[in-house]
Length: 59
Image 1 (cartoon, rainbow, N blue to C red):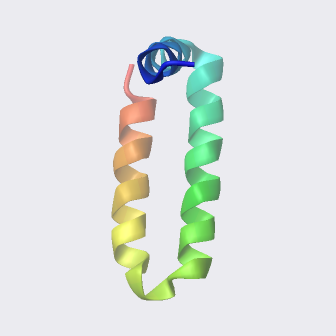
Image 2 (tube, rainbow, N blue to C red):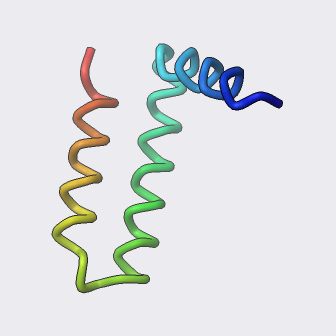
């Protein structure tokens, strides 16, 4: 599968409410894993997670 097709599919999924909910859960899971793996970088991880959530929660 071409990367461009994968990106197009991901963008289309983010246009739906269900896609945004799934992306939000994936973001939370990734941030939790990153915090456990590298606790020294907790503030950077929190900032990145907050930015992702703001993007996903916008109308």
